[in-house]
Image: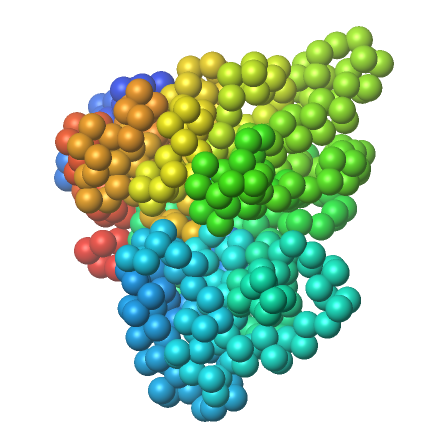
Length: 556
């Protein structure tokens, strides 16, 4: 019998293709970065592999991904004081004091990742709290959601906030009754400090070192692709060149889709043969737009005020501005990705989409979604969509959208979300099951550094709707729990759909790229409460091993 030469044959594992629930094959063959065989073990005998990988009963699924994170911010945070696990004002102050003790006087100190809702005091820090750390260092700390920064008195002095800046950031710089700054800066007002605090990634060698370390860790979590977003308002830049340089140096283990928050010239991917090359790891993605802030910072835009802060409806972008931005994206054939968390922000987002698409669909004599598909456009991405009312759900169903959700948010938010929204409005929040049952496609992410980029934790959160300690016992609003299959779809095939790559990525099938994640145990058979503990054994991108738990093998 003639045999076909291939690079790798995987056998003796539970191989879930994710094309449909429970669909499995017994072996797969890989050649030049693509899957060339997926079927029964006996059928694989016609192939002559250079290497046979015995999975020894482990579970293989398509490569996991993250549909929305800020990789630049994540890497920048590696050089700051990490406050993610601090549980009180005293713990936060103590952690920052340790850095102050070894930092030259007058030099900036930055902390990141604090969440005041986890503090015993359950309040936002102020300049006077940070002054307890040091008055001889300028100090800033950024909240985990990225939408709030707190500065000490020295930092505020160096910022030289004059009348012009006060007017520019009106309503975003908090003051006491006498007009004294309390040190809390919200949304784009945080840029005041982003522009003057030294960037730890300014040195190219140090930047590449940190990026490689983070990307290698992502591969160890089973990640084969991330969608990273620039955030100009916080000086979180993203560029193709950063990742292309890493790739050229053999230091890019996974695929990176770079999404920008400024208009750019689109690339005709249909004519770019390199994007059909499984070894091509970097490409440009969507055009990011903001509508509101975050629920944790009480800046997400709501139709009714926050239940725990009377008269606060959040922050909302100007309607005409959003429509204008969306119109420009449509004309350039860019894929819009719109940040919308509160229900008022989602109203605005839907209004803008309908306003831009309506004239085109009317002139074409067709529906908006049909028009979008006929023009071969990528779906409009709505990021977060944490609140969706029934009337909004009906509007969403008629539009060409994909929702980028972050299940791991709920591990943190479930402690305070009812205080923000009240008992009635929480029925509109985190409606993953409802949205999927109505035919909407959800892609899973983390919004890292807001939360961990580990997709296993995201899958656990989607299935159990509990925190990482198993609380509450029955899950928060358990009717919205997803099945394991649905949850894994969020982090595999649905991410591929969001970027129009479903013909190349997302499932295990012949001709698709060999991006694969191997797990130590079968998540479909595991106790849901143990899903968070499922370990990654190996990760492959284009058939190349980029992580091996036993040998720690990987790129360079």
